[in-house]
Image (cartoon, rainbow, N blue to C red):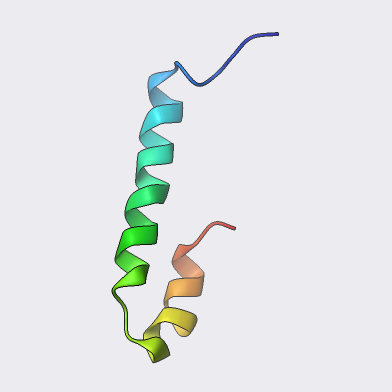
Length: 42
């Protein structure tokens, strides 16, 4: 089975998800659940 973790696009998209998690963590409580939910990909 081929592993995709070594591909640059995989690493870039994973880094982007981690960045969004850090940004949403700093939102206020109101914005975290209204705007932050649109940014999260879960």
